[in-house]
Image 1 (cartoon, rainbow, N blue to C red):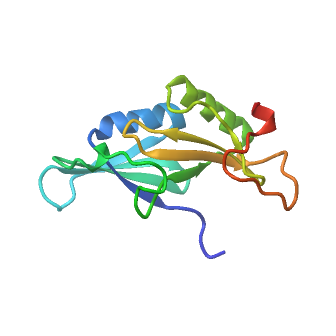
Image 2 (cartoon, helix red, strand yellow):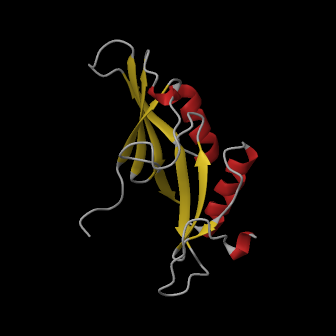
Length: 153
């Protein structure tokens, strides 16, 4: 492989502080800096570190209403949702608990075969997914979306 993961994902928000605080509380994400790029007044960019190689570039653009649009899965344009890889099964379970506690997910865990997955919505309504290698995976077996993970039934 020539790549080592995702460097960043750029997202739009109406309230960068609220969004960064939420990701900080749930994922232990850390703000690395805030800048006002030369794109004009009313624009700020916050660098939010999610992991050793991954960050969100959070753009707050005055008057931009894109963050308010909500559409169902596969109707969201070229990028539909994002997936974050938990560093361990224990951290997957911790993140699932945190996401359930704040109402961002119902906690349903999908068994895709090689990975386990839980979907969530952040405060802007952006859909994300936390994944972890499945300790119960069987070689060569993949499952469709909606397959319940036995260990979370």
